[in-house]
Each structure stands twice: as C-alpha cells, then as structure tokens.
View 1 (cartoon, rainbow, N blue to C red):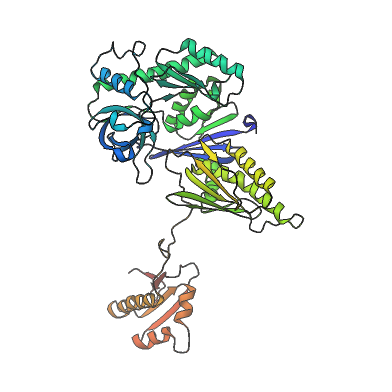
View 2: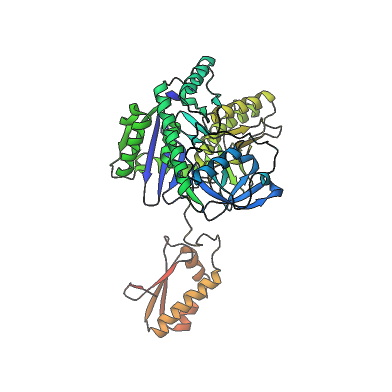
Length: 521
C-alpha cells in the first residue's frame, strides 16, 4: 500500500500527569502513545552507571543507574567497542580533553562475541549506558553500552567508522550517493546508519542532522567529568518529539494539540525538522475534549477490551499472560451460504489479519504473540493469509518476525517490546459487587435490613416506615401467605410497607418515614 495516499492526523491531549498521542489513519485509530510527565526512564536516555553485581552464570551484570530497580546489562549488549568506551570515559572523567578528542582518539580492538563479561567489567566500574527497554512489570530496565543517537535522517554511532544504509532503500545508485555524502561530512571515529527517510535528501539536511547529534555527544561527554554517583547524562527527546521525528511525512495533514505550551514546543520542533510542515500544527480550542471531538474515546472503548468486534459478527478474543499474548479469531454469525466453508474461513481470516496488525500497533503488544486463525485445509489459502498479515504488519515500525501458518492454523509473531503495553480501562467497576464478582448472601441482606429497621422503629420511635428495594428483593419479601413483610408487621406492631425501585442494584435499599422523606442511617 502506498502510505502517501493515507490521510494521517496526530491528536495530542495533555493533562497534569501525562501526554497522550494518537495517530489516526483515515480517521481510524492505529497508534496510541502515552508519556508520563514524571517518568524518569525513557528509551534512549544515557546514564552514568556503576557496576553493582557480576552474574557469571548469566554472563551479565546488574548496574546501578540511580533508579529504584537496578538495570540489566548482558555481555552481548556491551557492544564491540566496550574497551574504547571505558578508555574514553576515563579520559573524560579526568578532564583530559586532548585524549578525549574523538578525532584523534585511538580505538581499541573489537571484543569477541563469545567472551565473558567479567573479563571487561568489575564491581564498582563506572560506564555510560543507554536505556534499551523501559522497566516492564517486575523487571528493571534493560540497558546497552553500545551507545547511539537517533536523528531524523541518520543514527550516530560513536567508536566506529562504518557507514551503513537502511535496507528499505532499494536503489543501488541512491545507496551509493548517500554513503558518499555521509563519508564527506562525518568526523573520524563516528559511524553512521542512514535511515529510510534520508532517501532523496540533500547534503545540507543530512549535515544539519549530523551536527545536532554530534552536539548531543559532546554535551554528554562534558557531563561525564562532573558526575559523581549514578546519574542521567543526557535525555532522549520526549515521546511526542520521538513520534514526530520517526513518523512525520508528507501524508500528514494535521497535528492537533489541546495545550498551548505543548503547541508552541511542537511547532518549534516541526519548524526544525520539517519546516514545510509547520503550518499543519494547530491549537485545538473546541468546547468538547479533543479526544471526544475527533472520535478517539469512542474508538478506544471498542478497541481495548478483551473482545474486539470487527464487522459482520467477526470478533477477536485477546488474552494476556506473563509469557505471551494469545489472540483467537472467531467468525461469529459470519456465514455466507454462497461460499464453501473453506472460502468463508479465508474471508474471515483475511479480515481478522488486518485488525490484528492494527491491534499490535495500537496496544504496543510485544514479545511472543500466538494467533489462532480459523482452520483452513488448502496450503494456498494459508500462504495467502500469511502474505496478508505480512503486508499489514509492514506498516509497523517495531521490529517483528512472522512465521507461516502451521497445519493447526496457528501463526507465531515476535514483536519488539521496549515499553510496557498500552492498557486502557474500558470497563467500569460494578456498583453491586465492587469489582469482586460476588455479592452478599440474600439472607445476610435481609438480616441487615431488619436490623436497621428495628433500630428505626424501636430506638428512633418511627411510627411508620417504607422500605425501598430492588424488584428481586421485593418479590422475596412478599412471597407466600406468611411473607417476611407480614412477619415483620406482627413482630414490631408497626405499619411497614415495601416498595420496589427498578433503578436500584440488587443489594441496594433505603428507608422512608411516614412523610416520604428518606431516613439517613
């Protein structure tokens, strides 16, 4: 699909605690990003960490970065130039600017991929590390010592001289052009990864992006010399800016924001990275909440539940466990009499594949995902489903792998997970059971009503009383010739009336005096 033909809009809502960023494609909700305003840990942040514990059995280490949970560093995340990073850090800490000048810095030999972490790190060592995964559930952040800085067009990789180009740029001529351009402007001892959006860009745009990232590196190295304990050296862009940097393209025709301060920040950022698009940034001033105005709240209510309805009775059931996510495809009442069972199954599965790809992006589901499609007997149909899912998933910026359908109709997907999954509560707590799924025994409710009634009649000397209850309790209290209501009248020798109120939940009740006024207990 040609993504330039898609009408894309970003809708951004800001409140006291968080910023919510929604991506709409042809008015359809496809991505939701949340940024906590007090969140101290974000992917891309660089910290000065201190090695707290070496785990030889796991070939890894726990690193104190000044957060509540220690970060996890595996040997494979040290990067090939860990020795150069340690040497450079030592020069920077000592304030030796001549030795820490990257242009004249002598790189160390790359480490082996099969080595031991204890050969390069010891308890108490201090090294810069970068957040690769935010804390998820009970796990602390995952970090890497292979530091890099992402810009709009390029990724800067210190302690390397390699230039690589995104595989999505297919033209050999364009790949060579970009490599030559970067080679002519990049300084020594910095590698560069050329991103897909750099295709067709001029040297001035690439040079401006490169200089921004180099300034970021130099700012970080200056902080190293003044840092004592574990501390943050430099922050990644906030989530809003990262989303804009990575997905903004010519197909965007509107960015709507309901906060004036954030509006000014984003307009300034857009003017820097894409001046020609700055006029699409608009401040929303409507009376309705911005998500209501753009139909976001309504879509979220239907898309984040356990059951997701597609159309014509087709629906998904999405279950989450600690180890994986499981999605079950159901046809519901979708049966075409004109088609065979196999054709019906294929039609439902193809429709479900598009929604599943959307759900993975929307919920930011990561790790292992198992999809149970409706069984199909023909191998050609299973291949068509696999290709459809690959096509829909090609819109997803997260790294992912899809395996062909098994003979049981199962498709396995792995998707990059760097942040906790998006969760939106679309169910309200039951006022009767308070979310427990259980209510008090009817015998206990009747006893409770009678105890309160006895207090009002005998201790408060009420002459007459009316009990308002749910219709079920009303029928129970009036059942039979010798009903509970009649027994109460004989027992207390007072006028007692019972009325049903259909709007009450099943265990709700209250009392009225002889004037029809509610008695507060």
